[in-house]
Length: 178
Image (cartoon, rainbow, N blue to C red; front, side):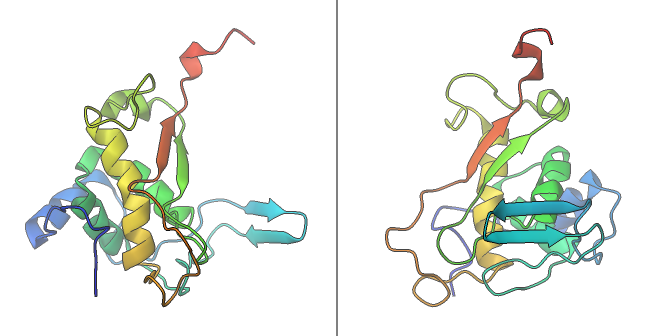
């Protein structure tokens, strides 16, 4: 089985995963749950999730622990200070898809983007932006490792997806007043 997105990874040793877990107060064996009531979808396909519901990573409807998310964050090259964002992505379903695509698209909101050095300007997905690249990559790794995505087995994609997910930080300071 292939556990990566085809790109080089950081081997998730026990030490590196333990270090990643310093980026959260959650317990390693805690199951990932929805953190607020959410309704998503379009007219005929609406999904409602209540705060406290267990997140089911698609396409195989699997659950995951905080430690399993940390393993994927290490593999993607994240630092512990990125881990609150990674957990938020996991709590939103991990960027996993139902088999038609995956990796996700994420928007980081709030001052944390400055604290970890995310780029909100030109070339956000370029190699010179480690937080953007590493965090964006986590969605694709969680889709594979937590969700059970496997080419031609649990997917119906024709062309496949690119590398990392789309990741943007909200640049609230750049908005006009009001």
